[in-house]
Amino acid sequence: MSTSKPILPPKSNTDFQLLFGDQRNVELLADFLQSVLDIPKDELKARDYELARIHGAVTEERIAFAQKMLKRNRPIDEIAEDTGLTFDEIERLRYDIL
Image 1: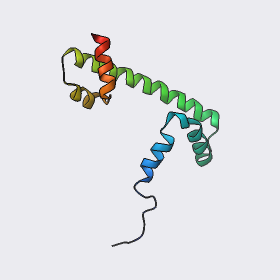
Image 2: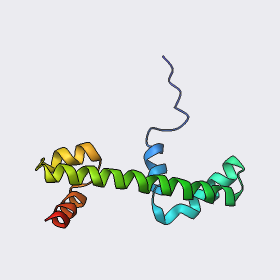
Image 3: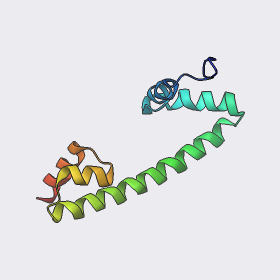
């Protein structure tokens, strides 16, 4: 059995997500990726725009699905599990429907 340390500790992914997953750190992430991957910054921004567009479309689909489930009186925990929306987001949708 090997006793050597892993290359990256298991917590690294969590730390990475906390640092770079925050919308306020988009420029930091772009700089990091640019330096590591040697990609021009304008190309990174174009990719970021495309990802944001795709994310928006997916979010709209999840919202529409949640609205249908609310109209069918499905439990909020079930809607959250099926859509990935938070309880607060679902409650706001519920008030919009009423």
